[in-house]
Image 1: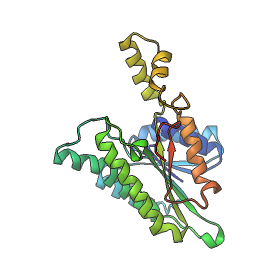
Image 2: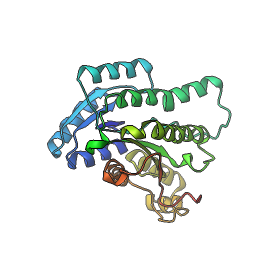
Image 3: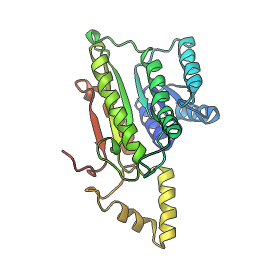
Length: 257
């Protein structure tokens, strides 16, 4: 099973949960040293086996090298968890053409090329009950426009459309493609950012967190562990009759039907 962005806050939680469940993981991220360390740590902590390949999914040459390495190792992936890089918040609806090309390459074109390479190794056989699951981690701007995530509004919708397209193209082969759109998630990085905002406003972390989550029905942000549980569910028999689906993981924040 491939997990991209494995060394990030959410990626770590996903890898830990899947390893504990006994899955064999192939970790992918840019930093080879961190991947090696994480793989060794996961192998000590859970029953699942672990290996890694460093890749910068934003670069075509790196993705090609990744694909070549999959072939060289004779890898046959069962599933994939794709976490495309997130573009930073912006309220600019008209980035320059050069910026758009950069954003599309980083957030869509490169990650999609990596996913194509991963799919090429899959060997599903629905008649024998062998299905392959793909989970693409997206964001709630895929379903609801966010004023301070102008470019993300576009890129997240592109992933939803691509997932639907792949669901139709690959469904008869036994490959399922679903997206998980995250709302606010209290990763270590976001918690540190929230701590800074609280200090700047002269309030406590708890007060600032309560203010930020006051418009969420569950009155809380998700955690990386919550995301990991949802990813595991979409990789399980739970999704055997689900494909092309976008699940909102946002505590009820999105109001649309």
